Image (cartoon, rainbow, N blue to C red; front, side):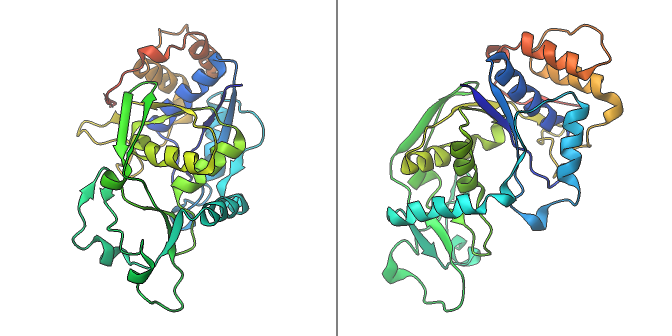
Length: 295
């Protein structure tokens, strides 16, 4: 059965880019007769906004969204992540890393998503002898191409060794890395389809590799066009995207519908009816592949 999800982070409030992702993932799930889950990705407490998680859920309800089952909170799923890391340790696929970011980035080259780890701690005889410091845990990546066919972008691939390097699964400060948590969650929740923004496209080969290492299914992916401001920057918390105005729900939904190339919906003052319209007229094939400028 189709199982999709929407996974906001409570580091801020929902904005127009969040609404686009929510609408697209919801419409794709419901138009395929599937489930739509909500997962709160609250992995990084120092960056969270107090009250944001409850505000996000209230906003989704106000816009007419209905999800299946209980909301999952990553902050309550650490046992799952620990068990997942233990499986990778048993298989000999991960290793402790004591490098500071400053040390390993010195002289490192840039890849597809920042600096490529130089592999200093990959070999036990080269690891610095640091006592009393908790290590990060990295996974060894292969020198081969990991690719997939995206439902919107088309073919996408990376050579993980060249483009990314051995990446972190558990940070030295004890917080779980996004890449491990999202793979463990998707597998445990039975997620079959992932509709999300193209800012996460670069992470997908890493997640597929982790899925292969763990022997879990790889979902089907569709990465949505980013909404950008007049300066060409992605609308996000960092670029001060305004929070969704609950007094403009109909206008904002219609705005998102235009970005997703949905037909003009009939007049209504009920957001749930607009979402029903989106489900009934959903066509992933019409979604733009490239960024959309949103005023």
